[in-house]
Image 1: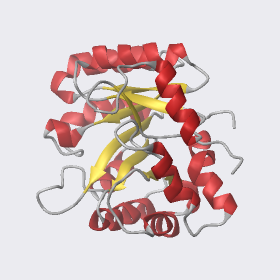
Image 2 (image 1 turned 30 degrees about the horizontal axis):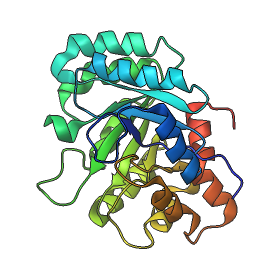
Image 3 (image 1 turned 90 degrees about the vertical axis):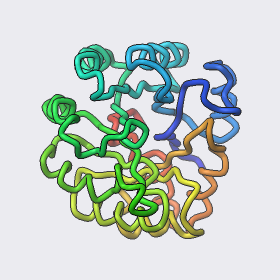
Length: 253
């Protein structure tokens, strides 16, 4: 299929048996094998925000035609977080912010995030977060939590990474997208059934579903295959694979 492919879920870092120690050449090879044109890339949560963002910036600068930066901050270190927001988004390399509430032990709608969200809302930032609901014990990023956030911070474009994970979470993710025009769903997941992509597109709308792989933790070729083999028309597949992301991030198609 001849279309722009943007992987909205990819990582820099060493927390993977598949990782190549930030070797940009190997990463580009993986992207080429999968047919990925561009990748907004975030650091796996393993260092300070400053160290993570510096790693991402180095990788982006090595191949600015293929990589874009995804900033990381945490409310546990709020002063650093605000400094990093100012720094990262003063640079054209950074196009999005990513949060990891489930790793940090604070739900996405905890008031600790308010200063971060207020800053992002004032600047129309794209904010991505893990979203997952597999049961009552896994609800820090339950997709329905984003509904009130999308209303409270209407200028933020919210991207729900993993689109809720298991089917219960995916139903919540669709509910969130239906409730709020500023919520997008990203497809990376190892959960769900054979028709997950069709379910997300039918529920959220074809213009608000984004392809993501979680590479190098997951195989981008397999994740792309979930889109290309879905029971969707060709134009819908193109939108999910990259055209929606290009519009969201303001990329040249």
